[in-house]
Length: 143
Image (tube, rainbow, N blue to C red; front, side, top):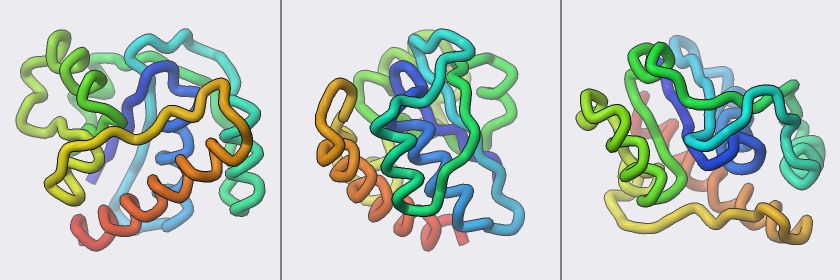
């Protein structure tokens, strides 16, 4: 199964989600991340990289924007917010049947993953905790 995490700039939430799922080393699961408004080649935010290092999940990362090639590659596209999903669907309506917010797919509930961008390290830790819980549930759902 190919899973594509999508956020705004691909420097905070989606790379953390990618790292969390990668760390699980699930057989047959490949994962990528991108940003709807990302500039290719930016580094992961310091907050995200710090939290991933604390959790022994650090990984090399350069931001990338969403591409049609990766949209077609993905079996499942998980956005961080409802507005990401709407913006994504405006450009890639053909992917509607495989695009969900992370909360929607895992818990069948409405809600966004908080954006830690520009916040304190504790904001990044809280975003990590929220995503870790959801991705633990995602793992159970896709098995």
